[in-house]
Length: 328
Image 1 (cartoon, rainbow, N blue to C red):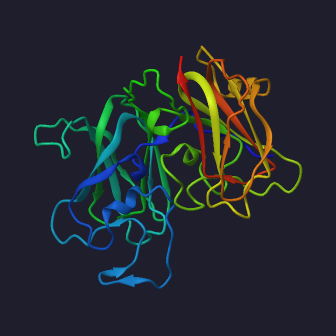
Image 2: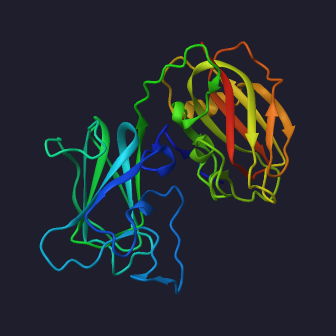
């Protein structure tokens, strides 16, 4: 039996598709710093070299021959609170840093100035080769920049900054996408994300490839996979778009969408149990490969909704879900 994956409304604030970018680095001789915030999992290319040495999917500095350490500064695309981080050294073995630390600050500038107040959110900590390093962050201030320090040098494949965005957007009476991460939608829990992370289907724009979507494992029998999303704001949903872009031999056969309004704070486990009784916005419908499916005949058009659950039968991948509506 698969264990449910509790996403707890957290997204990767460091990912480049949210507008995050590297604004400073001390060195990037072997591999450019921008790779560290790619939304895709790192890969290893056997026998591939560039002009400076072995091609590595991450950020890698040259061997330091003097005192000090290397570091980079990341500007978050959206300011927010940081709850946990993953410093991933996948495929870096013999060239990973011996230790790392993290600092963060809030600044309206592209590159924080000398007077910016940097706060240590992760003390200097040893790292291992080819490993994920997960850390909980206690400081819940709103930050705009993160500084990753590596000691003394080396390579890091990915830096994931899991948190919640500081959304101050005013939508008025306009129709907008209630399930866009840029508007404040977040994933809560899903039952499987074996091939593609659930948060991908809330991302802006069209998926770049099959990895830029939510994809579950092959179920081998009668099955339903599902994902629960907290909408950007309570609203009335007028139409739903299910996008299977890039999914051709692995799209779901059918899907349905349920919805509910929850006006109190409850646990993810309670949400799962309650979701079995949620009413349907979209009854089970047939899906097709590599296509945007637009559904306008939505039930509950006049009902306030702030959570939706997408069910896919029996399994497969979806690039994006877009639920268009107005805030109530």
